[in-house]
Image (tube, rainbow over all chains, first blue to last red; front, side, top):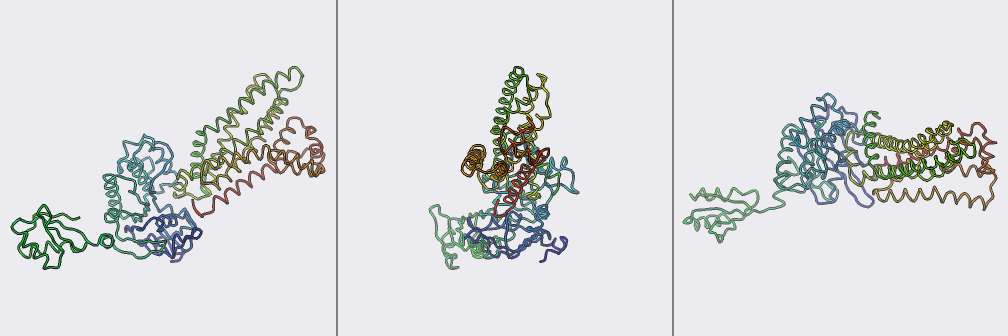
Length: 301
Length: 275
């Protein structure tokens, strides 16, 4: 798509990445990467360290030179980086701030972002702090915040100018389990509000909770775009189901499941254990139900 | 370039630079020295019947030649490299600001911090001298003006170092080496070259004008005494050649150093290889 197209024309695809390549010395960090993100879509960038995830995010932000083109709502990331960045809220993997209080930090970035036709910072900042659970920490110096609260602050800053696009670089990598769940819930809410989200990740849990599609990156190449369930299947093609069946029905259950072609055995606790393909988890339950055997409970591992 | 953004970044930089303990260490050292020199200058002025300001300021020149470059270089070197190392530079550039706004905002803030440090030193010296009723404020202000220009030129060189380095410690080390080179080695180099090739006064003057510290020294001495006899044939040639325009001639190299150093630093910073 050419640079001359108006921002409005590209609103359906807020992010368009066309044949983007980047080389650091002898290392090909990105190799002809192309994709587009629809409005309200969440795309996960998946790959090992060095796959090109962070480089791609830097290119979208216009922080590095690259071959090819990237447009954010019609604004070229290289030629009009500032305009493009106005439409992006960025959350780094580990947000590092100046050692000011939370409120002062928000005010500083509000000045940089400008709030245009939005409510003035004096109204937006308290609203965002409340929404992200930071209101009670407004007067604390940022270094005194926990990692989870710092990531929330980064998200609050990213949302200051209400951008249509959010870029997140492994946003929950440094959070504990509870903080991660809370953070993902916040992001899921933003996606429902119509934000287009691109996030680098190497956590399946994050991808399953948030992504519509997954971009598989390897050594700078975009290998494939797949759904999050497909990624789960590839990462763990089989799962183990533990089924609680009435003691008298267990032998019959074993027979029926084995007749259905499933690898089955009884474990030490007397429960039925069956291995199935990841996308066939319901099959053993249906098989037993059709034979009149009721499953009292089950676990997936 | 949006001036409001530039000013926002400048304020942040100023705030950060004023928290740099080394800036105040150098500034207070310079202020203490200036005050002591001013008292000594006044005492001898009473005895010799000379104007206190001229004598004091002449004594100050050597102190200024040590402290002013150190202040400018250390503040400049700490700016970009420090932020790059902490990771805050990438986050700042990821906001809707241009590289020019970030660079010149930081330069403005750092320049204001250096100005504050110099104002402290010159202010204390000025109060000391003013209390004693000395006059010749014009010479004192001219000296302060040359010091500010020298500080800005050194700040620009500090920014060049900062644009090239990724770690604050490396930048500080490089700044210290450059300071040693400019303060001591360049002087020795000029003296050695003069002995080796025995240049004519015009060539000698040209060699002096290349080094911003020597330009400052020429300007400062000329401001105090309206003569450059102390600098020998090169000084006499400068007066003979440029006469009343000497201040303008000396401002040229200093301003060139300021523009060239900040210009080079911006070009280096503006490369988008990586942040």
